[in-house]
Image 1 (cartoon, rainbow, N blue to C red):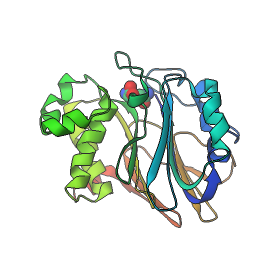
Image 2: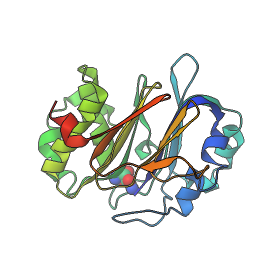
Image 3: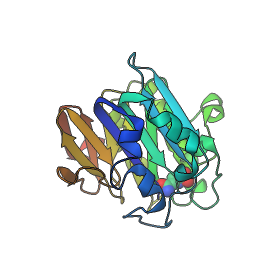
Image 4: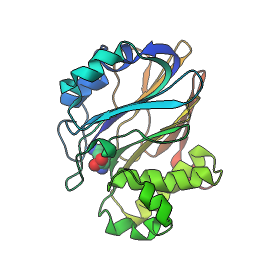
Length: 251
Ligand code: GLN
């Protein structure tokens, strides 16, 4: 299952965040430590989204394994940002291996990633997908479970839902429709990272005026806390809250 990272804090070079640290996302692509439920490496592409100083987003995605992409390595030392969402992908069997299927998915100020799979996709979630209108479907970047989850979440966000509540409710609905799914979602708007755990690993590290939310710890060994299963994390640069998902979904 894919690995993802969300970072908020002082501006860092993408290479210092994603390539250089011990057990960085780059290493998690070819030697992940805690894959669950299928997949051994994350070789089906990667994506990096970051926020510019004016709050707008930029993104680099490729269907190549992260460790083979010299072009990304060339620019990663030049790009600095204080808010980043990145992911390496292990495609679920039957899903396309194309750049557009790699997280982060985006719309406006949002960057979104999904670590996991929707069991029985697409039939199991056909009723949920039917809520989308034709334009939402045409805007789906790939025919994957993750792109569908983003379309469903995006609809709630555009309706004005609070991100943690929208994500909690979505996880609840998808888990009911497709039991045994793995639904670790991660969303940022550049000033917070909201993430869920649903049968997959997630860790949080608070540094000095920085917070990192990641599938696996990397870099500094101290300060990482594992997020319990079935939780929602709301992380800002100076504050982290972890709550049971049920509590949020019932609001
Ligand atoms: N199911 C998603 C995909 O195929 C995510 C894969 C994963 O987390 N390994 O893109």
